[in-house]
Length: 577
Ligand SMILES: [Zn+2]
Image (cartoon, rainbow, N blue to C red):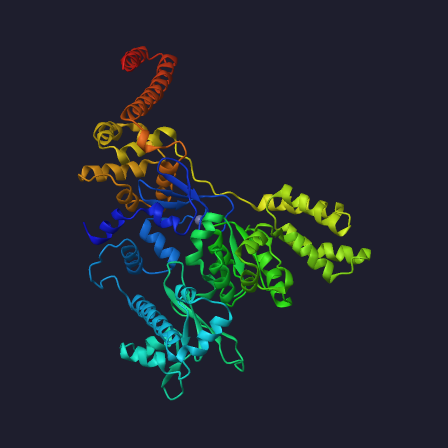
């Protein structure tokens, strides 16, 4: 068995995918969930534990565990292999046959980031890190927390990382690509981060892919400086702390979204583990999708200042577009989440999260602040301000209830708005076309599932099936032909081998046969397979009989009685079976 096969047989695809997607058990070996590769509200993504594959009937994404990791992490085949091997403690043969230049560059960048984190952390603990340590102390960050988050300090000289990377023989090209080092006009290099408190940024697989740096010099213009986009760091896809938070997000079934690194650390340290932040960018739809894979419920807790409120307002629409359930927290005393946790304690903060208001009340309060609610015009303007947010609610009843609530809250007539909503809803219905898998006939489905898992069924059923004229009418004809070919070559008929021999359409057909609600191959018996063949055989006899009867009638009409007699004899032979 080659290494790829060995790896695939020792990892559980359900377990691997569950790291990224919440799956629900849909049968003895079937799981379903929201597709991570396209935006959807009802699950069309399935995973089959027995045959170890996934398939989305919405966007067509499909494959084995390696393909999933490649697509999810946007990495090469070799990197996916390496990642799974490392995660499961399977030693990987040292070969570079899968490795292309881009893969090699990314591997170097990961290594450089690890080295940088170690160096920054050592700085923080050492003599040069005094100022940074004092800052953390002022902000109430305990040393254990600073270690857990891998905080560090980038020294003033601007030569620390350059020297480190040179010592490890990284090339100038690699250094530049890392984003950690900048090139002067004369070709020499210097560190991007100088005299800053450093926050490592991890991807969902817990690999360090970038840094955020907070200035320690109050005169510094840029308070925060982040790594630029690199071959391993794509800002719009990344949420700070998601790799640590995802466990907590699933347990509590909610995401707490805050604005900055220090908020994440403060909130996390107080025991609320489901907290993430976007890394110095406005919230993107990719980031929302990353959260949504773990929970569809979000509590937004941005800073209480005007900038925070504006950012929250923009985020609401982005979140609603991805069908998240959005609630808003407002903390009293003008405190940000970090300060609140420290001053009032985690219990008080948790109570605030639990009592968070639905976003439209928060928006209504914003409207009250923006418009003059004493005049009719002001109230209407306020209502108009709220509409886009309400319109994004996907549930119709909820939408109508909210319109009534908010109209009452602002003292306006909801009538005309409701009328508009009805029209918009009708248009939306027309636009929505549901992608459904082509259903496979019950007999074909049962036979296919049986021959995939049961060697007895193969030896008993395949020879008979092969001779059947009915096979020509099967929608799964080409799949069975591939089964025959594998069987004749003396192979066990494995799902993956079969799948590999098929064209795209037949692959989808095979997946839908294997994932159909009524199909649980473990409980299918050889007797059921026999019954299917009998059904097919008797249907075949019916067809033949009908054809001969028609010929008899034609012969009689033409006065060709010897032919009519011969055909009648054939008919009774068929009837005797
Ligand atoms: Zn999909």
